[in-house]
Length: 240
Image 1 (spheres, rainbow, N blue to C red):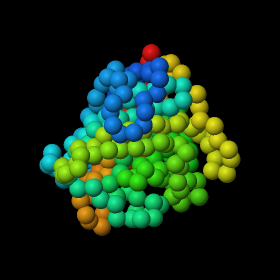
Image 2 (image 1 turned 90 degrees about the horizontal axis):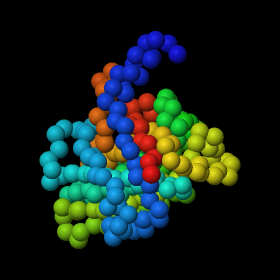
Image 3 (image 1 turned 90 degrees about the vertical axis):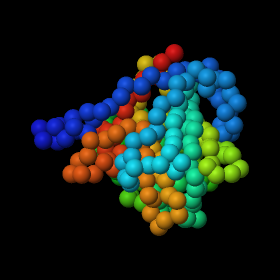
């Protein structure tokens, strides 16, 4: 690998965190209600790094998340305050990055590197109607609803305090759209690349903010690298 590229990867990954994820003996119910005692063993992590947009008002958006795992899936619970929930595109594969959505980045073997139009890693955009979108090898957006189960609940009045829960089945880089795919079996001490983000739109044509779980050293002034390069992800380790 050329030295210049290695140096750029080093810069992009300089703020990477090592995150331990606790095992759960039974999976939490994915219902957005936060009633499962399993979550009590998982620590909250911040979702607060602005990648796109100006300074955030806490009344506009605040977020945190926590993780669990078992052999079948990574479980994610996000606690989000968003004063306006906005979904402008009824077609789930059009303009999905500019609607309010969670974006889950996952790299099965923590190998890093390009994943823009391949399955070296995934960047799942999970919409308010629980549709799951990523780019495929043919450079078009497709639905991957079988990869992620998603449900959320909110308070009835703004600001909308939400609990958003996901079960994420993990696929390796042998995944192909036209083949029957089997998710990997997760195990103790396995390492994965991981990052979480939220696209926040208060009613504009395009999102006003993109908020990340990790700050990213910009490449040519651009921090929005997660959908292209898995080297900017954090590393999570599955623990007992």
